[in-house]
Length: 102
Image 1: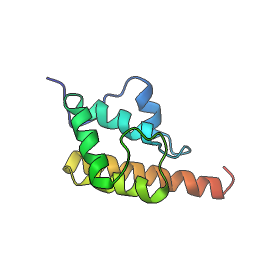
Image 2: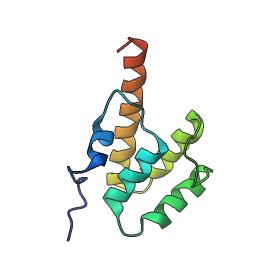
Image 3: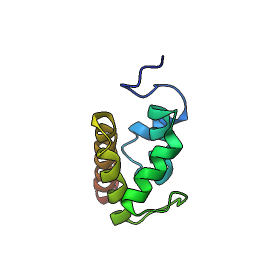
Image 4: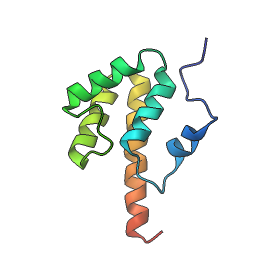
């Protein structure tokens, strides 16, 4: 059985989960969630989107909808709360670095 307490450190998702200079996208959230949950991912994604009032097929969301998606994700339990927090930190870091011209 795969250890679900931490994301797999291999593959293309690794760079996206830990890159502080690029704001996370909806695709990043989907890939990260799928990597952690694997089985049942589609149902969980649909539930999160429904709770957040977001289109599950949307490629881009405005800040309010993106935050609602992170909040819905964080409500799923401790691991998902950590994921949501990490994406909030990454978004804040990317915006601050952009402000500083980095």
